[in-house]
Length: 163
Length: 393
Image (cartoon, rainbow over all chains, first blue to last red):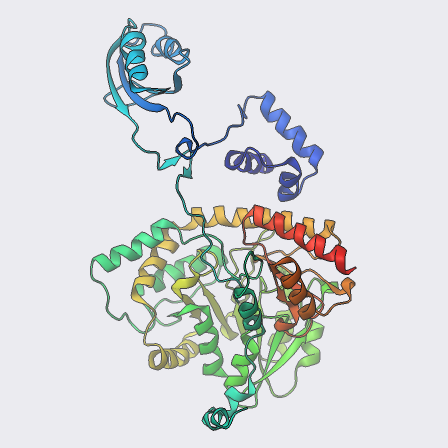
């Protein structure tokens, strides 16, 4: 179990780490690591392996990210789950959370232009029967995402040899 | 030597003339002049100090707290150190008169030696050892006596080895576990056997436990926590390694009050007190730094596993270090001296390691590699060492 947690923490930091490296770091055999990873995948503990990309550094349309606070009317018997499902099924929705506080749902969406995001909110999200109101916040700059600091200088300030 | 150099040297004390500059310095000078170096020669964490610790220090500056503190350090910090040592290592020290906050563990070692060693007295040093021990003993007029350990015994010192080195002039013994440069740790049973000899000969112990938190597979055993050892031990530690605070120069020394008061006399005249802003950071580190410290240590443990196993794969014999962040592989199979190996590796493959001979007896035939570097750097270093071995074998 302890090794499993360690394995998960390593993969969360770097999903591309070679199995042979993981095996050495955890003092396990390659077969054992492969077995555990496949078990974790089957149990849906590991849901996928993705990269964190700084799109500002490549020559491509950057895209617009918006976070939308949504107030909804929960339904008897299904609470927020039914409307949540209707929302997360939209391909534009990258993340969806049920929140405490002034708003009920927090929706993260990505589009190529601001008008595309606007269109999604006005035509798809606001028109859902349970949605009472929306407040859209556009993301201006990414400083940190999924624990990774963007534009972080990874310079080693240490002297080359020290006691 | 030019005549002006000769003239300048006449002013140097004979004690200073006797000691040699650190062997590490030579490698620093060499490596610093080169580009594209992968350095495994660094004896410090590759993390920056945790942000909350930095912030506590910044806050103290913003509040204008920039005056001297008590000579022994802020009472609040000494109390925090006392609680920390009790909780983590089962050793109890009174913050009022048994703890002194110092400018790094380096000052703490110097204080301990200066306060206790008389000229001509012998101090046993378990070697391979940190480069400053023997010169510091010499500087106070003492005689450093190496107790050499070897890879066959995992660089552990035995009671018999100590017994063989004790003479009527022996005053004290200097222990450092987890060890720099070998990473060796000692179990409670092993330390108890050593302690029995120490007690029988009524020796004083300097126990440098700066790497105590970085003990990976077993619980660290603090020397003063052993039966009958507290009263004869001066414990040295600090914040540099566990809390990634090397540049803050903040350490501490703890001892029974009569020894601590002796050290305090020197500290108050020589240093006055440790840096005030650093002391504020240290309080925060002890109070709220454990979680981040444990994360860093987990990462060192994983990198140790990776690095040691990779070294073995490329054919270097290496014992598995139980602590610190150093591997100390044997390079004897290459037929090169540790210095020649390190120098050639640096020039041919641009990997900086420290030759084992600078750490004293028993260090020859080995190199010290710090694995406190990023995984990709370690991978690249192993590849380069492998290619180097292929060329020289």
